[in-house]
Length: 219
Image (tube, rainbow, N blue to C red; front, side):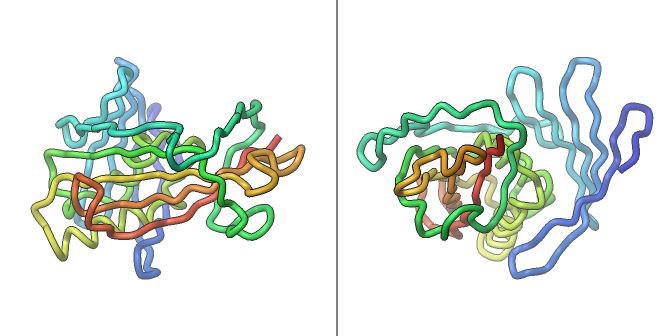
């Protein structure tokens, strides 16, 4: 990574659906208004992604519409979480469980559902731009492009093959904690298991894939 006139320029290796990888070249900076801007190049694809201070997201100058259909505690399908995370020294994500097998994380504590609509067709987006949007709208604290790139690449691959003119899709993040330990699995660690589903349609139908990831809070 290099810093050029307040621009951070770096390359990220992203994992794609099917096991391949791609290098995303990113030029990141903050403009005079305080908006965060990412200029992204992936082979022949380019995107400019802007995260404004007021919470809006712009892709190539056009706003990305985010519809929030459900957020937080789901009284029908979840237990009462009673969770108040401490200030973590570090928050990170991984594909495997950091404590006990992943199958032990069965107590559902929350559901987030979002519909994303852009002016640009999904099949034409860079993986890095789409994964940055997903991380932002699902509020995946500590999330990195590398760990979630399979979601974005899966959506791009699906729409490229099945509906290349599509500009919208839906996402669902169901969060779980350990079945006996709860959120705080040790005095030094707390864990959420996320099941992130993404769908071909805006009404949460046409499942493309479900990806499991673990969010770890280290104290």
